[in-house]
Amino acid sequence: MVRMNTSPSDYPLKINTIKKAGGNVGPYMTSKYAAFRLLRFMGVTSHSYIIKYMIRNKYQFTLILDGSSDRANNNYILVYFQTQEGSRTVVYLYKLLKLG
Image 1 (cartoon, rainbow, N blue to C red):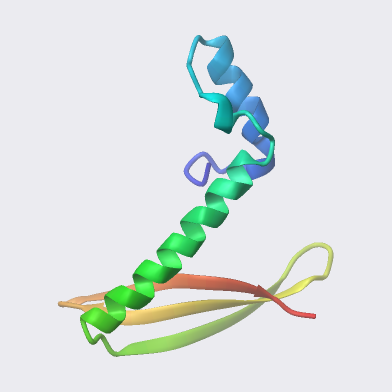
Image 2 (image 1 turned 180 degrees about the horizontal axis):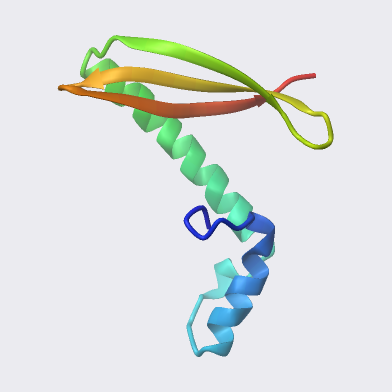
């Protein structure tokens, strides 16, 4: 969905398109909440992996915080880790925190 620049709320339409084309999506992917559950799972898994990876490799890191807001005037803090992996500088988006 990220590569297609679409929202998880567009997921049911995409699933229906796949079904009409003869694709088999299975019983668990037809819920309108499936995309959100999948994204949540991927987020939790990647958070755990990033922390374990940085600890295991003893990487020093910089914590970057960036503020933002949406159209509804909700305020957020984005949390990033920046580290060196060999000669490369790598930035990981760790979390999006809603304020208030």
